[in-house]
Image (cartoon, rainbow, N blue to C red):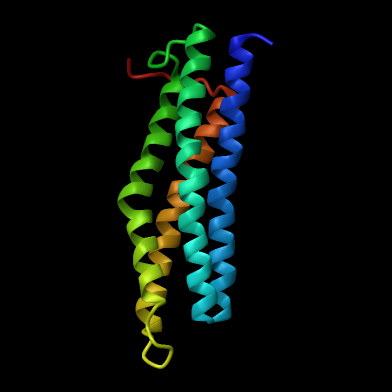
Length: 160
């Protein structure tokens, strides 16, 4: 196996881990929410926050390093190859959305679950959760589009 193939395999494995973690987080939180059980909702969000620490963030690092390394070793110019450039843009948008919107909303939702059951503000919780789901969906769809662009090598022009 040459270095290009090894880095590409590393890159793809990290993409699977990264996307799978986002998808399962959205799935499990939706299921926990349907129970109306604050302890289960809290437990689920705590698990999502932990899985981001252990899977999403390392996934980003490995995706980036493996992808850049594969492109360089394969002789593909990062900024002049349209499908690579726009995939980087989409992946970056996902990262910004995750850092600026998703993470703070996860913390808010998690903290809300510590309220007493009788005094729990379900409407505030639901509005925060809905916003988390919306931003989480954006943080998911942008790297999914990037993945499709990379796999299909969609012929788009770079701006460079």
